[in-house]
Amino acid sequence: MTRCYGFLAASLVTVGLFGATALAGDGRAAQDKPPTNNNAAMGSYLFRTYCASCHGTSAQGDGPMANSLRRRPSNLTEIAKRNKGSYPTDLVYRIIDGRQNLGSHGGPDMPVWGDAFMRTSEGADEASVRYRIEALVAYLATVQALNAQ
Image (cartoon, rainbow, N blue to C red; front, side, top):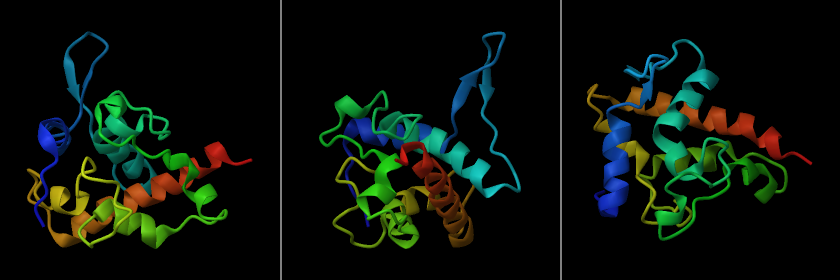
């Protein structure tokens, strides 16, 4: 499935696909390296790399690009709250993946991450795409507690 995200969203996807760049303490660019052997840590890394520009580092929909989008990004800390206190793991997976036709995908500004992860510079296969999405889903489950009442 091919979608047109518009110039802004396409630029974000392109930046995300090639990794996040942070400044080292001495002002040089330092590549943000993904953690290994820890699903939640990998999910946090992936979230910062691919999602935080829109959803914000706190996952509350307040990223630096949020006001530039046609539809404001969701507050991802309230997923369980919006689902009667239950975190819908399978639904969150399908929304992030985006390759199945779901009305709740997030609108035209949200990239189809299943397709985007498949086209990464590392030459991803279906298993690595599944791992990345599962890591994001696991991470988002951990931020639900930030908004618990």
